[in-house]
Image (cartoon, rainbow, N blue to C red; front, side):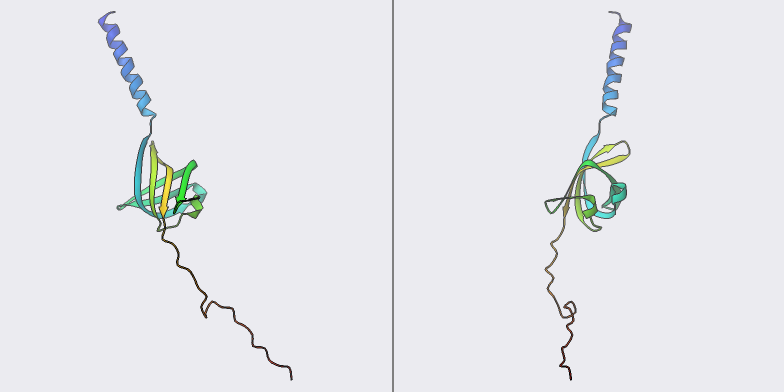
Length: 124
């Protein structure tokens, strides 16, 4: 094998490695506060230390709110969230969205929320 052939093989192998890495995605995690939710566009915005990140949701994305399986329409602005995602070019594809939400306090009826009853009067 000549030196030219050796160099050509090394160049072809280097190109193959670079081509394989170009299609790979980069997995990462982000923590922050949900600032916008767009269910019709299958996306939401998470603010992480003064940086807005727009995540796309696909049919493989899992949304968990306080450990319960949910959907994107259940996300609310102000939710604390941890998002595992993959970067695919310029898109951020959410794989798992974990939301921690404080439990809502029990709402007991008050005088203002009770129905008003009409006073029954005797007919004359």
